[in-house]
Length: 103
Image (cartoon, rainbow, N blue to C red; front, side, top):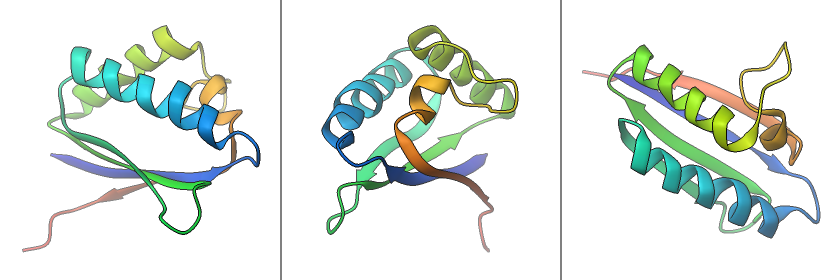
């Protein structure tokens, strides 16, 4: 099982557009087409420009298939990036962390 958190800061003036055009669309497509165990966006209560996306995948192959869904919806990634440029263009900062189950 893969546990990951994608988090970041949305550029000023792009917050509502990001949640509508990126978060909501990716959530709908992922739940319809991919094999996510968990795929849930979260908006920071004190700063709407801050977010995290909680993801759980059964396998690396399922995660890679998810990226293909993102590319179909949002276009390609830059050569040095994994996520589509259209997603990253909304962000001032982005980070991915992987986690292991304890115990």
